[in-house]
Image 1 (cartoon, helix red, strand yellow):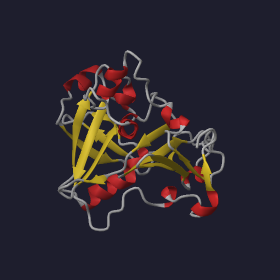
Image 2 (cartoon, helix red, strand yellow):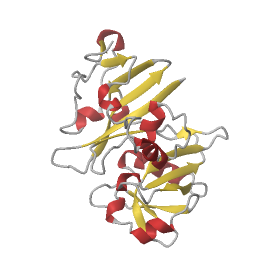
Image 3 (cartoon, one colour):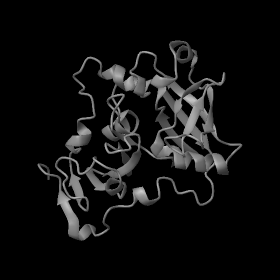
Image 4 (cartoon, one colour):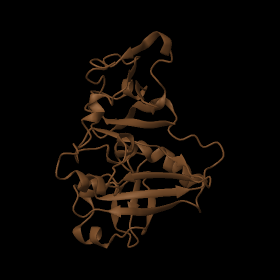
Length: 256
């Protein structure tokens, strides 16, 4: 089974609010593989990452690459189980690294790098995607956060006039309080679902964590129909920088 995560980064250039998908991380059997995508060429001040200097390279390792491994909290840390619980993980055996990174791939509220899983198809054929709301520190209050319960319905509100992102999608609670935003790297896919499944998109609170840092406070789950022709996580930013894998196969520096 192959697991796929995408790496999103925030520009450090003139437009520090801009996000783009800059790479794709996969795991097949016991082999991790990372490749940069064209978003890494477009967004400023992000790539290349340490140990992976060439944008057209394919970096493979039997261990999780350091830049991603460092985003996992050590199991020896006393807060490890609490950290996992914020992502909805309550199994004492603990989830695998890719599952953790898919949900808890951001370590700080102002993180400029996040990992995420795109929409996937459920057994019933519907689309599903989970994400933490962005920007909650600007909108939610202790009162609104305490009022959120697992399974509570939320509403999506596209903001076409948003001065920072024309694809912005705000999220409101059932009292029309703005809670935050859909992460920018998911907005185009979610807008597509809203436009093509207008009566079937359901966004709910999966978990609210009042004791967590703001980036981990509101975990949401969206389900909808899977429209004919829907291809999530596609477009220019998602295309590998080079398709010449046989020429550019490399091992990550320090790994085999």
